[in-house]
Length: 351
Image 1: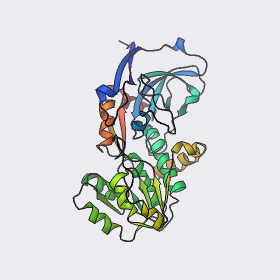
Image 2: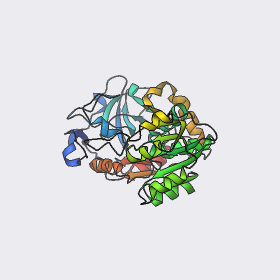
Image 3: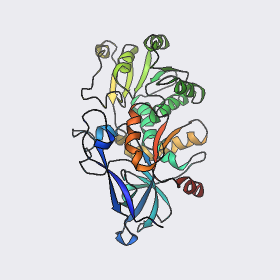
Image 4: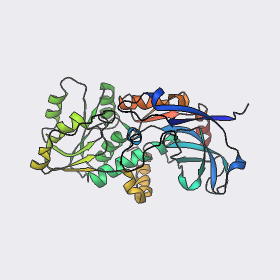
């Protein structure tokens, strides 16, 4: 029997600090739209995979930012890979795959202008469009190349190095001839960074001796620090910066769930070492996405970039809990929610 309803997840309450899934989100049941409901240029999009990203916590805050906050009762914002179930757009025929910020929903009517085609490169897979070839990969690309201006011989340190963005940052730095130290939250992640991704070294920040080990590992001081974490690790890095070091401030996941986020204590080193700290948003580089994706796809095809996914099963009902786990560092690589369990058959048919 074909289902007639679908589930969507909505923001019910703005969290003050940590996300409490049953309070922060509410699930709603809706009637699945029909092909007859489409206007010219629209498609019926069935979500297959949902991307979970650290930035989502900030989207829930009613504050001035680079993008408006998600409104109360609105569908929670998020990017999905989906299957086109019906179409009135020649760009996306029925049965094709697409990607877009359709939100935490199983189905949506979407205008084709809000979607992107999904091209699977050699050695690639459909879900790469949300990972290494998606916004996380693009964030890594522009952050380390355009903001960090990495070059051969640089000593690069990456916090959150086993995450979707950090893992790609380190690999791009290696491609460009840099020496790379990764910081992660478990011994398994440290091993993955060194043995699978080719990082020169990696440290577990949960190790009781981490501050001493970090000092020893950075004895030659840091040229580029790519920060996804903030907090104490940022402070340690500021103390180990070379004169004129470049600090790429991509994220501060250690502070996102705090009602009183803390800034760096070692900020005077910014003056004495003439450090350049620069924040950035990947949307600043929209006009360059095509070129970046081409280069990332080539590196993926050549085996120069490896990636890993952590996939949460159970559909949208598990998305809130999965997002909480993201801020605890439970994932390695890209964190995705599988919305429809039959997706593996769909993917095999599309490759």
